[in-house]
Length: 261
Picture (cartoon, rainbow, N blue to C red):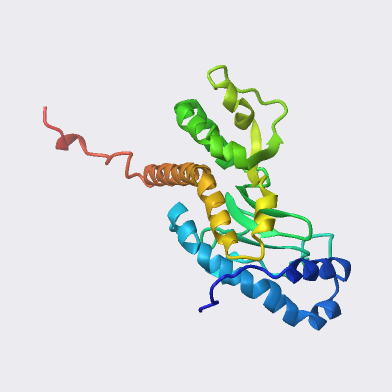
C-alpha cells in the first residue's frame, strides 16, 4: 500500500499525545480517532516506508512492513497492572517475522510528549545472547572493541543496561569491555534529541534517523549474528544427540563371523 511521501509530522502530533496522556479513556480516543489517523498513524506508516531501505541494508531479514513495525496506540493490558488503554507515545521497531516484541535485540525510533529517540537493544535479562557476547569478547575482543568504541557511536548514543553484581570479567578482557562483559542486557539510545526535534516537521527527519540507524548497524549486526550462530550450534548439538540416541552414531552391532582375521 502506498502511504505517500513523508513530509514531516505536524506540531499537533505532540498535542494529540498530550491529550491522550491527560484523558486516557475510550471515549476520548473515539472522539479524536480521526486526529490519530492523520497526525500519528499515517505519517508513521509513511516514515516507516521510507526507512525500509536503510533497515534492509542492516539486515534484509527484518520485517519492514509498517503494519508490523509501527506499534498500535491501543495497549495490551492483559498482563500488566497498568490498565490505561492507550499509549501516550508512538514508536516503530523492526524485528524478525514471528518474533515477539518482548524478544530479540530491537532497533527502534519513536517519540512521546517530551522525548524523541533512536535506539537499539534488549531490555530484559537476555542470558543466552549475552553469554554469546561474552564468549565473543573472550575469543574476538578486538572485533567487539572496534564496534563498541566507534567514535560516532559514542558521540551520538549512550549505552545503558543492568550489571550482574557478582560477575567478574576475566583478566584477559580489555578494560574497555569489562562493564559490557558483566551486563544482563544493554541498549543504546540517541543523545541528539534537539536535532531530531528541529527536523520533526520536515522530511529531513528521514535522513537524521537513517544516519542514526546506520551508526547503530554494526552493534545490531553483531548481536544478531552471534545469537544466530548460537542457535545453529545448539541445533547441531541437538541433532547429533538425537542421532546418537537413535543409535546412528553408536555403530552397528556385528556378528563375530563378519570380521576377518
